[in-house]
Image 1: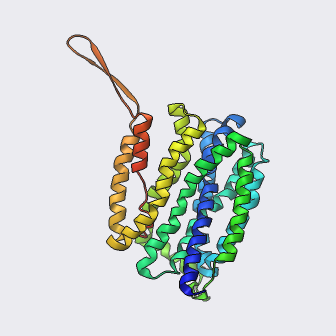
Image 2 (image 1 turned 90 degrees about the vertical axis):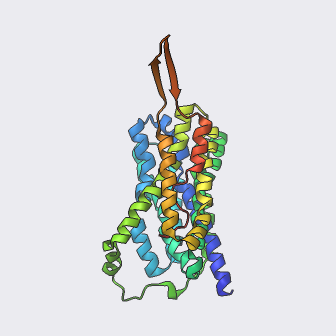
Length: 332
């Protein structure tokens, strides 16, 4: 296969793997709702349950990125995908709260796949196309929407325990496909003489720390909202889990797919400019979304008049659709 064909194959199979990883990573956003009732969790316990995979996914990204530089994305991604399969399957047999927390830590590794696939994919493309390539790979965030379509259907038909079993099978198939359709290039690896401490020196760069802050806000916001929205629709608007998941997907799906557009814009207009305008748009939408349901009374000349300010479910969903908190593929 030609170099261009290998690059295209790597991009396709890596995007597939990241989509499945994100689907698994966001699993608690749907099955957490019946688990909350089954285990009798309060709001704090439920929040901790949904946050556990996110924590591991965040903390694992630095070492996973370093290992990708040293050993290559093909090997690291394959091992990462395979590691999550037993944890996903075991979730269907868990019965106690602490067991779900422990399993959630292993599920979080799926979230670390972003730091593996991004450099792995980018190095197969010339600099002028890297933003677009990373944007396509980043579109794997749409796995959050896939989870909201697939998990509720499985949950309603067979119960929540079937969801992790189906996801484990999907992940296992993904491992096989990724291994057979991905490639390695020794030229993409750092020199063997490179020390671990040398790689960590990047953390001293003020620009790196600044970009980490941007990323924690925009991508952290995307992940938090993806996990929270189904529960919010159920609790605030009284929707059933299928309708709530469908509306939540109106945010998750474009939030993933539009990354390719963001990558193209970053290549054309600079990642800094795209990031700047996306953050401002996100801030405005988040302010409107966070405004509480409010009733206030004004004493008029004749009688008190009461006014209500708040977002109905349709306006809320439209704002969530417009608000996409990350400039997709914008490699600032």
